[in-house]
Image (cartoon, rainbow, N blue to C red; front, side, top):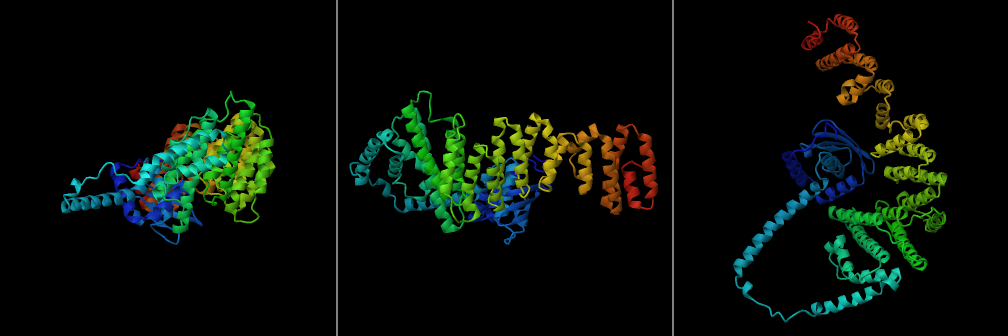
Length: 570
């Protein structure tokens, strides 16, 4: 965490929540939350404890100035100008970096509304109780029940009987059973909660083999995911945005469950016979067809089934011996489903899926061609690219990893992205195992400028390239005083002489400003120079310079005053 992003104290946090609840409406909060979750805050620069400058990617890239102390003073370059979703996205990032839950900002408004509703409800109940004291004494015969309540157990028994036949039924009939189990869930609140959808499905689950139980748990969650997404589609048609906060939380929770299930369990066990395993594989193929179908139907901004598809191929569908046939067969299915028309976002799921199949087949050129096309359409996210780098180290094919790093570096160079730390981490791992790749790393990082500015500087410091780092700072006009002390400390320790021209040049620039602030900055830097010359054991050289400096600027009275205040001259 940056020194300019300290932990938010309790008092400031409560004030921030109160301001957010009063300033932003539900739609703005929901849209801002979606932008935050999608990683659209592409740069984040604290100016001080309360002021943040950031860039948020929307229909364009908008500069946002967040004033956390007074949210109403925050501004954005978008047409709305203030109290917009872009500011909310940056506010949520600020909360997260300050050690507070971003979700609480969204909940603040809901909590306020709930509190008001609770007060009204309590008053209304008390009023009714006062007006009709005899109501509580009215009793209903316990033997009188609605016909639907009496029929409910029979309905459940029928579903239980049907569920017992699941091991011999195709996946299509599994789905029909799930539909029947959830027919009673008609209210919007139940259909926007993954656990509410799963509950009746879990109640009818019969005893199953270990393999079928894993498939049941997965397919039930995929069914619930489909129902949740259908609700968000209706929300988009009615309101113009996809996720409310509650929907986002429900989708995230369900997606985590699916990810955990795919990572911790498998439908294949050592005891599986050939015939039994063939049956499991067929069921898994049917599930994959369903996931692919849902993936291709998703709107370009939604990635729930796309993410499940990727997880399936990296876990349960991954061939034990890396045979080519499953990937080749999947490519054929994707090609057959390729839409002839459509915008870049609607084509993205097939493009990403196809690029991964080529990746698994080690057909890198074909994968890169697809990724380049998706990148030109501005539909791809930087994380889509760096995901490949996370998969490569396990193969220990460092030559291949070098080629992917070069290619992805070129693709990332057109993005303002928070994914660059993951990208440079790939280079560090590569150079660790393949030191001769280091020159290629520097060449690639320079070619990615200006997008790679921060990771290039970080890499120079990591590899102890002190002089190159200083040359870069001087060439870009970065002031020495803008650096953190911890950033300059290793250079002062290992290459203090390299800092001399950097500091001397800046001192002269500060003096040329001919104002009090410039003179104060010059004196501050002169004190650092004094320490450097002492460390280099060149005190006489420093004394000569300081005397000449004071004489040369003897007519600048304000500067002379600051020099005396700094105990540099008498």
